Amino acid sequence: MTNVQTRPAGESLAEALDRRRREGRPVRIGLIGAGQMGTDIIVQTSLMAGIEVVAAADAIPENVSAACKIAGGAVRSPETVDDAAGVDRAVARGRLAVGRSYRDVCGAQSVDVVIDATGNPNVGAQVALATIAAAKHIVMMNVEADVTIGAYLASKAAAAGVVYTLGAGDEPSATMELVNFLRGLGYPIVAAGKGKNNAFRTDATPDAYVEEAKRRNMNPRMLVEFVDGSKTMVEMVALANATGLVPDIPGMHGPSAAVDQLHAVFCPREEGGLLARKGVVDFTVARGVAPGVFAVAEMRHPRLIERMSDLQLGAGPYYAFFRPYHLTSLEVPLSAAAAVLHGVSHMRPLATPVAEVGARAKRELEPGQKLDAIGEYCYRGFALSRTDALAQNALPLGLAQGATVTRRIAAGDYLTYANCAPDEKLEIVKVRRAQDDYVRMASAA
Image (cartoon, rainbow, N blue to C red):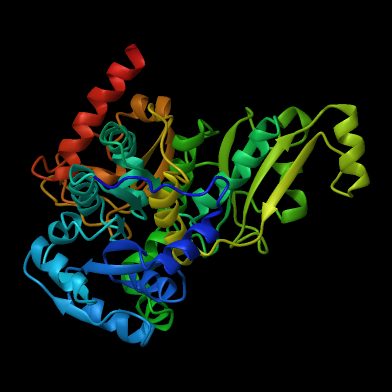
């Protein structure tokens, strides 16, 4: 079992990493997925003290070697191995072990923490369960899996005495920093969210984005997941389920609210804003907000308003707090380090989800049709409160891939358990069934 190491009182994360460097005991990462994000992690850790990627697995093993070449000479040389014992032997020789399966990496004793950078919900379920079973910390960059089964995975990790955490640097965890800051000061959160940094076209399909994806060194499907809004819905539901904030309306509002207008737009309708209630997640499409995140807090005490006025931060009672950047995968190694060195999760779901990512059809779907992946041709993600999702009998987005259409679905209609049958052989479907049972018991208790 991976234990939190004894450390000097008050030691910062940077100090702890430097100590591990001096001791010759770096935090050892096992990486699952060496695509765009995984490559970033290999490069980023090569620049850091006291932490390194020692093992990796990818459906295309050559991706690991390509990532190492991009990183340059500061990384271990890759070596393909056949099992978890092979991983341990290669790591002991100073090599970067390339497993033929994620199981080789998750089960290796020479790995302290696993990062899932696959983006595939079903693979995410498999990786997380294997990691927790091996009593290792798990960093989930796979937000699509988190919004589907995160509550269950977090409970399993807690029972095993390991950390389950979303990765620092993505918009949900960057926003979580603001939420925790403001809640720590006792200020109620009115709204929290992000700026959307791609064009918002709900009918986008990969064939129209091949050229742009190539130019940006991205997979067209992944690019479309951003463009059609699915990724925004996933990210904001992850934030909702970690904070208790909820989408105000299905799909959220998504106005064009500039940085200097966030406080005036994301506030109650009776005070000139958009919101029917306080305590919501949302996003803006206005230029200048992305790649940043925001939280709007309510501060009504006269002394606070006086101080905020002195600081030239507005007249109140609503104030927007803005972080103008998130560094995506580049910050993720900090979550791996925090889990191993301090036993800290940067972000994890509450025991009972408050929101769900459902799906709406991009085009008419016929009975018997097998559904494709998020960001492709059949459907797009759509954020709902848990109450609305239950009322719609909504099929969770993470269960859509591989599902079979059982009734005709018109373009724009919700995918539901009544018109789609998820593939019961998939691990994520089984785990979601277990989470539904777990949530019912937790709610009853």
